[in-house]
Image (cartoon, rainbow, N blue to C red; front, side, top):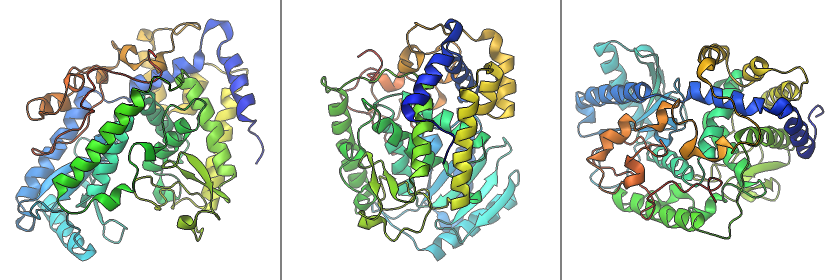
Length: 458
């Protein structure tokens, strides 16, 4: 495919263009977008209210007596925006053991939930997708938040935790995921139903990008958990979860305390620019190579027996459920559409006639652009030569980003979670894990007492 220059040339061009007149226009545009799309306290509260409503509904259903309700997905991993969906898992009572009910049983239980939702009222666009790989009940709340309900999705909950923990290594991961997802939605390539990428795949592509920089921001995920995580979700649930959490805690603390580890100080604009170039290369070589965040490298498909036979246009392996392809819905035509979106973005970013409006319009949807314009009066100017805001989250725009303060999640978990340390409660980084179980504890590295992000102060 033609149209995109090499990674080195692209980075050079954009560095020169965006530092004209002493201002980093792309960094400023990214900061404006993140300010608008980051969830506020109210956005957290609304989702907690929906979870509470679903919990009360489930408690009223005879066939679900004793079941618990747990969020997962982008809300639990804190990778959601103001308008992000809410994923909910109904966990069936099975003593202390991890169970896996059959498809028909899940379909029957979700049918009961569907009837209860209709009877209660106040929920729109009810849709039961019974024949999906994982049966799902979809609806929209009165707060215009789309919700997906599934049964016993413990693997989904643990994957969400994994992504949440990864952000503890470097907080730029979260901002880049939010930016990439917003960009992908703007170009209509973030919709698995239409044959493009789901948000989980995009998050893993960001992980892969940060793993393959020089120096890397993130390690291969096998250095955090050296096994196929879903294989270890057996037996007594508390024991299985504790083993995974403690293994990750030890390894993340080891990675963060490694004084010999090189520091990458790239700004968010630089990380986004290099992400586009790498994403384009991934699409161009998709017929022969797949992406492995577990190994932290691309791999030849013909040499990887786990990935054969090749039946998908793009392969992004799930590092926690190998060899599942998280990009299996992407078709060859959609792969071209994704490459076209990258080239279109590249064209705007390298244009000599660019301005703040054109940059924001290529990165975010129209309603985001309007909100950015309204808020622009209070936006501080980033001058070249100032410390990179994207590399220091503990001091990044604290006054204008409400999610950096203590959220409803922190207040809710403060009294019940004995393992949460001071870093988790004081809102220093504003990153919360959205588990609302009365029994489940939120994991943090036990020795961590303050923000210690690679690329911040090292």
